[in-house]
Amino acid sequence: MTKQWLRSLFVITLASLFIAGCASSGSQTEPAEPSAGPVETPDTTPAPVAPPAEPPAFDANGNPFVPGTGRLLSRTYYFDYDRAVISPDDLAALEMHATILRNNRDRSIVLEGHCDERGTREYNLALGERRGDAIRSFLTSAGVSPRQIETVSYGEERPEDPGHTEGAWTRNRRAVMIYR
Image 1 (cartoon, rainbow, N blue to C red):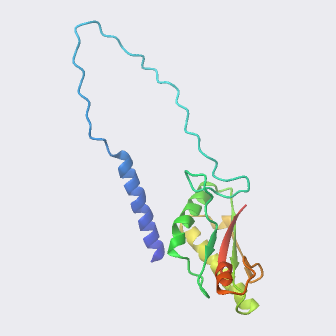
Image 2 (image 1 turned 180 degrees about the vertical axis):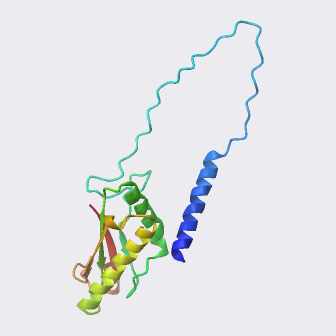
């Protein structure tokens, strides 16, 4: 149901952008009145127009920019305790990643799943894998080729914050997207 809702939202957004771009300004120009003198024809050869310069989609380290800005796109997604469900706040950024990957079929990503230190090693490896797979599932449903995505789970082995507090554990429950 979430996939269908996201696709519907995406289609509605694209349709509204298309309609807004095609709307006329409503002003009409009056036809020129004929003059009594000789008619001169203006030079109708169009001046060469350079295509707009596209900013690079990736920085020197291979990280993608938010389209139309110089701001790097978020590549870390956090999860609730013992969960592998993508937050609704992350869906827009993940849709941008999907667009970038669809437009750059030569690029691929590695999705790293991570957990906090609570739980057994085996359980945390499985949970980290489910977190990476949740992101992978979203991207493939958005049209990214499965061949562009690799998932790996590190469980609790690579903490972002080595602390033993709720704040540290919150930062360690994540999936990280690495472009190659």
